[in-house]
Length: 595
Image (tube, rainbow, N blue to C red; front, side, top):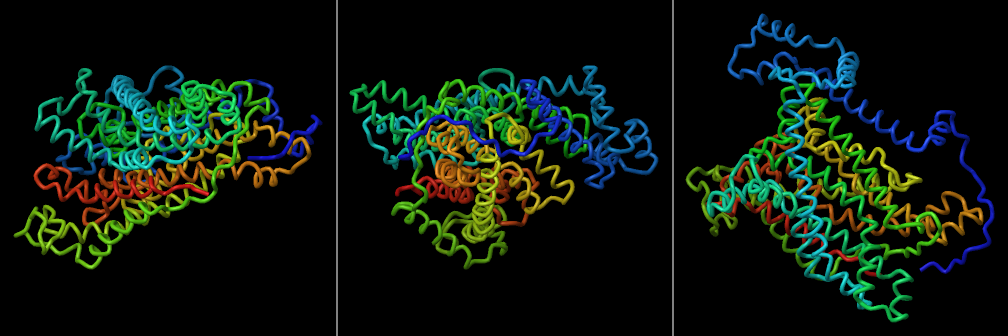
């Protein structure tokens, strides 16, 4: 707790450099900067998508012909006819300007593959995906609140320690791969038990399984972040004051919950847009005619008008939701956000692994080492899908390869890359979040609207498919939730009394950052990054599942699950990588931040 006392109000010296006329004009017009940011974001992303054929170096006519008629011979005359029919632009800039001109007239263009107006295909699909993602976001919030209730009860009783059971459950849920859940739901619940439809989208019954596949992992992640926010709030001075004054536990729990929710409200709203990206994989499993599947197919076929319209819709929604999150955050905090009325306290700075975390990590490491001692490429058709035995302790896969060997070698790729990427995106998220001097929708909200799948396709089109492209795609999007979290926490820190007092006394920018912002923002965002460690591994796995990441022979966990998911019902041992991801989530959830 800070012991600084506010000094008498004095003019705060302005050390900022002079602003340009454009920035001064934007400052005079409320909302002008946000509008300019939105227009620039939509224009830049649409131009990037429009440049996809030039960046990829592939013949657009050939891609379109393959999408239309896969078996047709691509002779020069046929390709020339396709080019003439499409009226392809000479360069991406002119093509994007042509598309933008049509957009201003309410025309989204026509698909290069089907020839149908883009609006007729995309808008209904957008409605379907928005329904699935919105319902999943609501279910996620409800489940996350239930997971955080034990922490809220302990906070009302004056205890701030972390509950182990709720944390382990949340960590395990956060590490569940959406596509594995989707496949299991189809095989077990829909086909085996007949409790739900297997595919399509024509009513509420078709929502249940896709929504659960999206909501369960997201609820685990959000539950961990919300629980950490509750524990941090419980240590603030006003809570001790209320408890000493005799406030009832129910009242205290309600106020702690409301205060804790303010820091994660932007993350809750980001789930709505983030689920649109994650839904691409789930939509593929359930054959849902949503925006994710259509965007994926259009990007693979280089159907630029469809992808441009989809990206414009997603970016616009991302800015709208990001702005809504900022506004709701301000409304929940109230006048304290601008009146030096907050008293946030520094969280314990260094995460520390407890006995249980070390124990689970040791078990996982032992299995990985045992797998590394075996050959992951050796095939034996005679033991195809063989159950676990002394010769193959984790059984064999559909090609007769040792599951234990592939599990161990795949861990080096999946877990090793996830650890490295988590460190990188944590640094980027803190940098971007702390540089945001005001909590407003910006670059992070724009990029959050771009599904990792679409980003992966763009990267793969330029650099070629492979694990490197998947790593780059994940890097481009995984820092966003951390930056949004850091942005919200930094806004609250700047509204605290001790920060305003230090600023009034003439403290420099670097001193304020080192002494006040980092101690308050870095620990919770670091915990958030630890919680997202399995999510980073899942993002790599999801791209590999769609064929954008690791190659078919790679033992990377996502690629392995993609190749064996259809065999989970009769040979559950092939799902060992999913168990590894869950154990990784459990280890992350057991890492504590005790002083």
